[in-house]
Length: 307
Image (tube, rainbow, N blue to C red; front, side, top):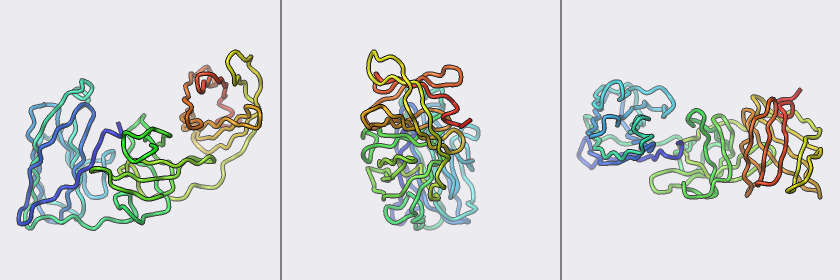
């Protein structure tokens, strides 16, 4: 879902105080319109739609989807007018309620936005955030990923690129620069804990963050494993680097000087070496993992959390 939202910046024609936008969304798609306005101006937003489950929310400057909205269409209707309390970029999110989204309905709409007085000029953006294309902080923090979802890290800038990893809210990532792709900003980042990987994420899910903390607690031991088809289970040495809240990185010795890398977030295995898929099932206090359709590993909670 986190990749189904696109962002568009609203511009008013010279000498006008408003604009009308014709759009369309399907299923879980949404559009975030960004419009600059000044404190004391009156903003009016109205949406015409034939779908009773199609609404818009408005977020004040510094807020994004996932934060509290200043206006919620599903409870207040598709017509807003009010005096603005702050200067900056306001975000208008057009979306469909889940009841219609899960049926994959297609909904055209017309969004009318007006701001009294002179045509609004978008304020200069803070280069410390991912809505800038150059400069910025050394590190990002992942934000606004919906509950029970993850942010895809892709091999290139765009939703069509291969997924090479996943991040969650609060994860740190090194800033390697951003660029525009159509109407969305994509940022190249370096992520991961002890084993780093480089990829691209949508800039709407990044804000300035701090560098990763000190090294995690280290441990070692052995786990049941089978690394080839038909091989009986044996004990494979492992080493682990553990953080907090079930975040851990585990390396398993698979022989011939090679190691298998597995990353856990909030206690769940989410990523392994590039090019290999990972599936798992929960059995009591351990995970039974299958990697690449052949390898099998039993990882207990003690490996992830300690104890």
